[in-house]
Length: 268
Figure 1 (tube, one colour):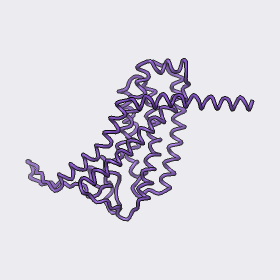
Figure 2 (tube, rainbow, N blue to C red):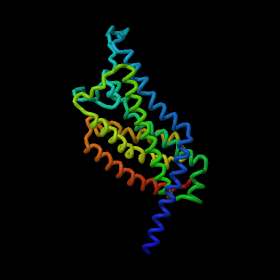
Figure 3 (cartoon, rainbow, N blue to C red):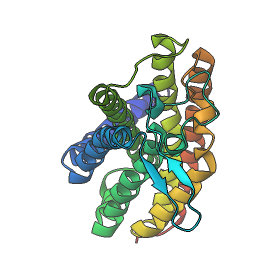
Figure 4 (spheres, rainbow, N blue to C red):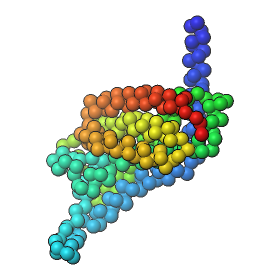
């Protein structure tokens, strides 16, 4: 019995590895993957440079005559989070348009990646001759996590480049490099909370990509406003541990639900 158990474990590992190889090969050959990474890299550069160019410009409301002075970014890390001493949320534009957008952007990849399996008939054939539902969910969750993690890193690099091009300050206002590293680690682990949500909605919607994207964006927005509080620039090991624990619970819990959805519904 023990030997059979070990063989079963080995067989499971082999099947998961095989599924991962297929999905990562497909991901690396997908144009969508590279488009999303490129957008994550270029977006903070363009946004930072354009906002810096508009800094100090005045616009006048023709009806009331009220003048509004545009305020550009003053610090590179406004693209990542709010620095100590700044008002809650920081600059109005960067309060929403910052690195946390990547948690919602990865929904596009997950939804289209999964819906393509059902639209092409690949999923039905896969479950018939090769893989089980659980392995499929594990593989898709890991592929989505890797894509999301790379988008976060690309956005971080773009933020640094945008700050350097615009001549912004790199001061952390009392924080240190360790806080910045822990902040990014917390965001990486938090991606494991969002990706399982998008995976569950996608396997339920199947080939209906529009429904999966709408449902994922709607479901993700319920947690989106909490991201800046859970992963602040001044993150500590506690924030990282909480995000890692939350990521593990969501991955296992929603992964099991996704598996059940696949088992109880048709593949078309």
